Amino acid sequence: MGQGEASARGTTMEGDCLSCVKYLMFVFNFLIFLGGSFLLGVGVWVLVDPTGFREIVAANPLLFTGVYIILGMGGMLFLLGFLGCCGAIRENKCLLLFFFMLILLIFLAELAAAILAFIFREHLTREYFTKELKRHYQGYNNTDVFTSTWNAIMTTFDCCGVNSPEDFKDSLFRLLNQNQVVPEACCQRASQAGELAYDRKEQCLSGTLMFRNNKGCYSAVVDYFELYIYVAGALAIVVLTIELFAMVFAMCLFRGIQ
Image 1 (spheres, helix red, strand yellow):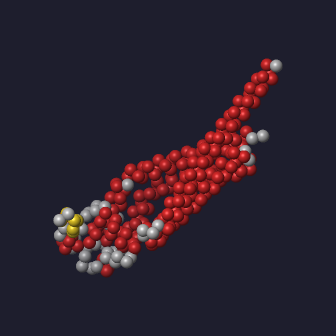
Image 2 (tube, helix red, strand yellow):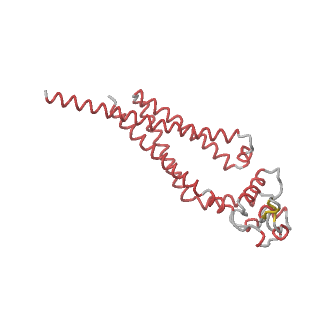
Image 3 (cartoon, helix red, strand yellow):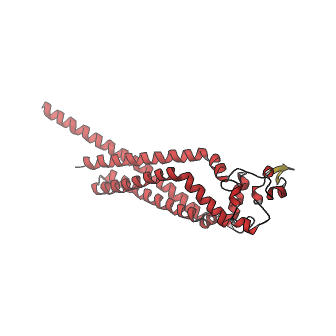
């Protein structure tokens, strides 16, 4: 009788643990499902945004590729979350195994991408944008999306070039504007009658250091978004942690299903 009660008690505890794992896995996969939905929403918004961001993305191959990567990752996470939730609730071993293999592949790919992005982040980013600036920036062509975007960045962040004003040496801008050292967007501005106006623009265009912004836009933008970069990094760690726990719960549930 004692052995029977112990066996029954053990079976009940095992069933309770299995039920707990099942609902924990459902919660983790629901979070993955929501994350995939968010990425899909961001990607679709960027592609259909009527305010002009769509044209900026289309003009830059790197951003254009990035948007479709976001859409692909969002779709994959959306599908994985759905499969995980269904596999957990229905206790389907095939769905659970398929979910585990897929999320393992994604987890390893994300981990490798994060490590490579961290190792090569500064060199590749500066090199890419400097090359693009020298090759495509025109200075005053407001109909060119690349040029107007760079003008907006330089005036917004009071910066010049990617690394410094020296980036405009041997560039398309200097070829088109041989009598100017830096573009107008690099010139310092002062408040006049409540509005910002360029201060000593002629001296600035001729290369006088005192009247131009000498800080590179890469450093200016990174400094401005430093908090957001750390938040994005923290979110990436959270996502990887959620995926790791989801894999563990999937395998535990798979082994526990009779």
